Length: 111
Image (cartoon, rainbow, N blue to C red):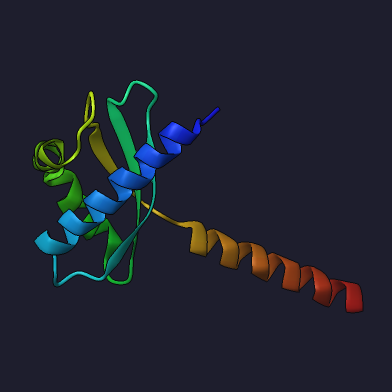
């Protein structure tokens, strides 16, 4: 169960991480869609949505993850700032697949 305090911490990490990554990678078009920080604050999974070459961007983000942790620990007052692991947010693709399946079902019903 996620507490309100954890949700606020997730949002804070998302905001600060977004600003830091935008300043480091101004040429890239991306959005951080979600952050989930572990209960012990040691690990954060960060979902990224990108228009061009998301796999390469994720690789770049994961390469600077240690430095991001150090930078954010200077900005955020917390017992611990988590380490980051970036992953591709494939929610949109999954939604499109589900939408196509529903459309196919509708076509089959009409037959």
